[in-house]
Image: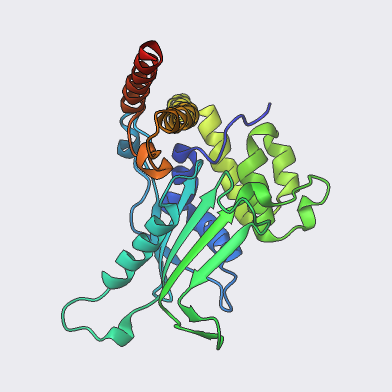
Length: 298
C-alpha cells in the first residue's frame, strides 16, 4: 500500500524532523544542506514537536529551532507557497537568533553562526535554475566573508532533476528532495530500497507510523485540508487582484481619452491607478455625462 502521506505537510514535517527521538534524521537533513567541513554530529531541538501546536485549523509556520554541538543556531522550515517578504523574514529570523545569543556581559567573540533554512515546495527565484542558494555577509569584490555570523539558505525542491532510476546514487540533498516530493506515492519498502541511508530509513518509519495511527492520520488530513484551503485562498485573491487590475487599466485608459476629448490635460496613469476601482468608475461616469451634455448643446 502506498504511504499516502506528504512530508511537506507541516504536521508530518515537524514530527519527522522536530521530535527529539528523530534527531539523527534532522542532522542528516542539515548536513545535506549545509555541507560543512566538519559535519554536525549532535544537535538539540529547542522547540520539540507537540500535538498542542496543531490544536486548531490555522495554518502557521511551524519551524524547527535547534543548536548543534559547535554552537550554531539553526532555524529550519517548510514553505508550500511564496509570499511577499519571505526572504526578509528569513533574514530577520537569522538576525534575531544571532543577537539573542549573548547574555549581558558576554563578549561578541562568543557569537556563533545563526542559520535560517527554508525548504520550498514551489519556486522562489523563477528565472534562476539553481535549486539551492546560500546567502552570507560578504564582500563580493574581494571574496571576504564575515564568518560565524548570519546565513540564509533557500532550497527549492521542485528544481531538482529527480529520477527514480538514479536516486540511489544521487546527492544527499537530491535524495531528501525526492523524499519530500514523492514519498506519498511509494510503498514503504520500495522507498526504503531507493533511499537506504539510516536517516532515511528512520524518516520513512515515522511517516509510515503516521499513516497507520488513526489519530495522526486524522491530524494529517486536517492539516492537509488547511494547507489546501490556504493555497486556494491565495490563488483566489491573486486572480481577483489580476482581474481588478485589468478592469482598472481599462478604466484609466477610457478616462484619459475622455479628458482629451473634453480638451483637458489627461491625468497621469500613476495618479489614476492610486484610486479604487469604484472611484475610477464614478470618475468615468462623470466624464461620460459631461461629454454627452456637450454633444447635446452643440
